Amino acid sequence: MKQMGMLSALSLAGVPALASLHQTTGELPLSKGPKMPQWKGFNLLNKFNSDNQTPFDEKDFEIIAEWGFNFVRLPLSYWCWSSKEDWYVINESILKEIDRAVELGNKYKLHININFHRAPGYCINNTDPKYNLFEDEEPLKACEYHWKLFAERYKSYSNKDVSFNLINEAPNIEDAKYDRVARRLIDTIRSADPKRLIIVDGIAVGSRPLLSLIDVPDIIQSGRGYQPMLISHYGANWVYGDKEMYYPKEQLSWPLLENGKRYDKDWLRDTLNNAWKTWIDKGGKVHIGEFGCHNQTPHDVALAWLSDQFDIFRENGWGWSLWNLSGSFGVLDSYRKDVKYENFKGHKLDRKMLELLKKA
Image (tube, rainbow, N blue to C red; front, top):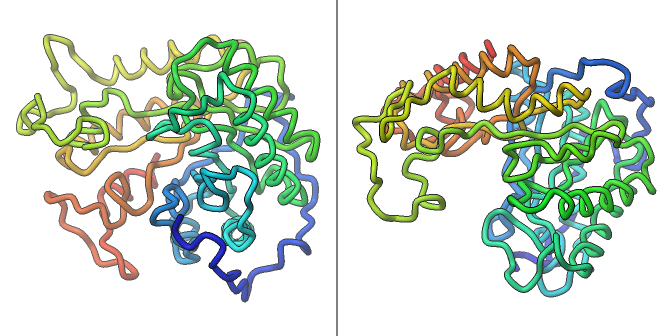
């Protein structure tokens, strides 16, 4: 495990100490009306992968706020502050780096959403075959332990500032199995922080809501905006491997015709609206926690597809969080071969994509 137990606490110069921050209540009235905050922003991947984790960079928060966005999602691997061999080992110095991200969110007036991208017993990427969070008691107890730790740690922050996102992209399993895990984790968090706002990723990799949770107050369900995958993940080796793509890149377009099927804005709208309509009709709230387009899709195709996504998000009043700020899906340092980048604060900025996001 990289740097396990060896990192020293970050200096928090210029940022209020965590223990001294006691926000006013500022609860969000999610159970009292149809509206919810219009949270729009980015995923920051500093602790997404324990093998190459880095401290959070204040410049990222400053840039996001400067551009007028208000939301940061932190997809975290518990391996960053714990261990796959011992789920109950805690590296306090790494947790202090996460503290810093929360404090920087407060400093720049960005809502911070803390997500367990890798939890004990489950990850959408390379999960541990020996344990199953949705079947086994041992990893579920360990996951409760970690969420209780976070709930205690951030209970001084209001829901306007911090929310928790239980598990990234639960698999396509029986609803009852996911319901059991979600309720256990929600109850654990709220035993320490009774009114904490909680985001629950939709089931089947965020493609549809877990309708059985409609009785749980003050939750939001998180959807995804990656369909069709041929557009969003073209050439992504973690999806398609290293084999040659079956669809010629020069034929990619939006709208897209594949095997006689047309994918266009109407298809996107029907796919998203039909998936979430029942949840919304029952009073449920939705946020799109991840969406975006990998850098192998031609830039003009990516922008056309994103534009249609934004129209649909806007029609539904959904906020969103782009995967990612910097990287192959992002607006900074995305390494697209067909983009004329602008030099921006030490980064290569995709100005056209940024302007599209700012209008969304």
